[in-house]
Length: 247
Length: 274
Image (cartoon, rainbow over all chains, first blue to last red; front, side, top):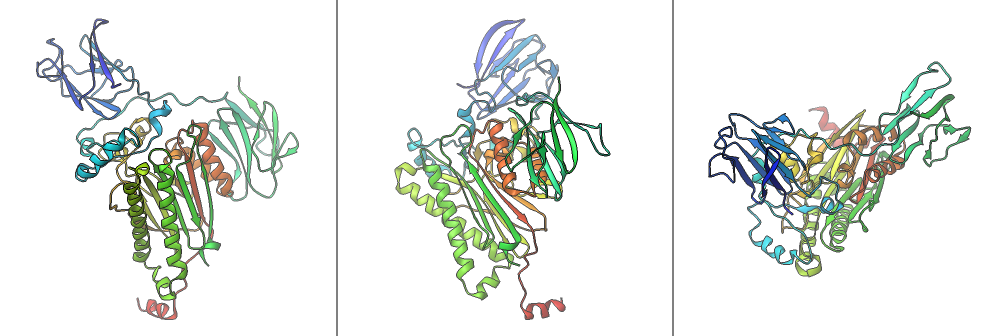
């Protein structure tokens, strides 16, 4: 299904517009694809450019401007359920192509060919397309004709509970090291290194290099990662430290 | 010193968490300093076939040329031109063999592959690529991309449509603008760079860099550069932990020593006057 825009006024749904064209315009004049007959709306107020699955909103230097999810915007990379506000009117962007979350559309690498060469071979490919291969063709030049910037961010992937390593012995005793990164290095590369990896399933310690293996609760590690439990004591190059989960 | 002694090479490939089969192919040959990675595409098993042909044609042809040709021709490989010619000719050979297979066999119609190849020689690396498989370089603590994708997204980045930081949210990631085996002719992008001792080169399919942020790749490589098999394992694990939606392949090459080609007395003599 193509993405669509749902127009509503004062919270009342008025009409749906599927984004089937590469470029659709929004404005007061009847020449626009989406006509909003209101004096607060400029003759040509905004445009939405769709390149395959991605849609970009652009303000066409309108008098009163527009905002997306309450934030004034000139250009915007539309994400599912974004609300474009033009005066009293709201256009909600709805797409079932959820960014990167459906395995279906994510993986297939497709070849995109320039408009010059595509004439003969593409027709050939298209014959087989339904049964054998998925090939999409699009003029690469279209991509260059518009500019926008993106303000939206997707939520980060799920993370395990926050955790800390506290140094117990040596000159740095008492210091705490919060495990904020996916990979925290203990030791010095080239000399003695172990890493603490943060994974969705928890925290793991792995020996990387050095003359001695680190130990967890007095037990030497082998070359396999070992999952850390709350209050485990790690010993690396004579320094003891405790791993604990934060509440 | 030759490339067997000077290069530490590790490669690893994994189907990922979603796909049932692996369309990536990798090949490493330390004796000639050649590493190649290809990410195939096409219905059924055509993707594997395409990447497999690309790898076998390029590696066997280049290795044969470098191993069995006369000393004079071998000395010649140290000219920048010759490394480029070897890569270009053999990638084009792979291109036509994939293209002809896809033309003659209906089940392979439309198959193609990306490719990224590194040829290490005389303290340099010649890098050839087509599509969105990448080469990165870790030098010191900093990771940089050596190749630039031939993809719609890269074109959008170049034109200012999308910033690099936001590119990972695009849904159009998987569109390449150049591939091996799709058209009768293809032009690989080839560059030659000097290498330094301690550099770590990473070749990967988009299953890695789509799933794992460059900053995480950098920290993993930096922390684990002393243990390449573990580093390769870690990179693949990070891609799979983040969803593993595509096949993931990595090749790591670490430069551990100088591998300048010995010069002939005549060349040394001439260099005195330069």
